[in-house]
Structures are given as structure tokens and as C-alpha cells.
Amino acid sequence: MVSPKKKRLQRILRLSILLLILLLGLFAVFARLHQVRAAAMQQKTESAVLVTKAPEPEMLMPGSRWRGVLRISNHKGKGFLKNGTYAVHGLIDRNEEGYFFELYEEEDPDGLSPLLTMYVSLDYNTIIPKIGTENARYFYIWLDERDVKSLTMKLTNGSLTSSYFYDDGAESCQIDFSIKQEK
Image (cartoon, rainbow, N blue to C red; front, side):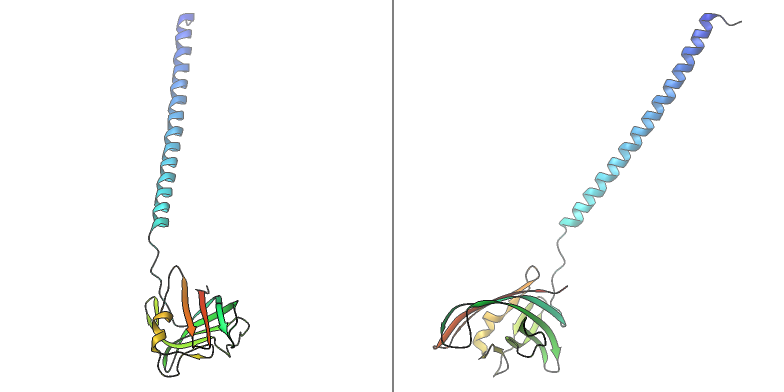
């Protein structure tokens, strides 16, 4: 027969072992929870590094299509041009003569009457007009070499913008447009 003192010691020993197993189990659970949290923090940090990484450089490509708005303002004189804002679409492409840029009013989906048409050089993210004799036109206005600087456009934040002032003595206006590439 086992004495009551020995039974009590055995019971305390069993409870101590159970308590030790329980504590080791809790320790394992908390250790795993710590690993999961550490992995999540590392993934979050790596994601933040990817998000803050510098964007890829933008490049102009033949065959690209563009949409945006054109605004005519400060119109003076009698003529075809009128103050207003117009939805426009454009394209950069190539034919046997070279690269060209054209801009159309949105209401001209077939592209029969370009608002702006000119041959260009594509320099990575810049459009440089190649203007000769009567080969570039803005509305009905023939452009010349003096217009190259104001019609040179740089792709910035996904947009091409232009600001052109027209004045022939009888008529003048400011023509601005901003377009973004279609996705």
C-alpha cells in the first residue's frame, strides 16, 4: 500500500509534468506566432521597397495611340479657330517617309482631318518636329522651322503636352493640348 504522503507527491509530480508540457506547448505556439509576424513584416518591407523603386523610363513607340484634350484660348481676329476645349485623339506611327505624329478631334474617328500633322524624330521620350516646306500643319496653318521649339514634346508622367501661340497679324490664339497614351 502506498502511503498518502507518497500519493500526494506522485500527484504533484504528475501535475508538474503536465504543467511543464503545457508551458512547452505555449512556448512553441508563441515562438511560431513570432515567426509568422516576423515573416509578414519582412514581406511588408520588401513590398514597400518594390513600391518605392524608381519607375521604368518612359519611351515613345510607333503605333501608339493617345487621348486627351486640346484648348484654344485668347482668340483674336476673324477665322476658323474658336475658343474652346475639344476632346482629341492622336497617334505616333511610321510610313515610307518616316515617323509622324497626328492629332484629331474626337468627333473625327476615321482620321480624315488632322488638327495637327507633322513628321517627327523620336528621341526616346521626346518628339522633335521635322518641319520643312508645307509638310507640317496645325489646323490650316502651315508650320515652319520657327515652330520646332514650341512643338517639341517630352513624355512626362505618361503625358505629352504642347503649348503653341499662333499669330499671323490678322488672327492669333493660344493652342494647348495634353494627351495620355491609351492602355
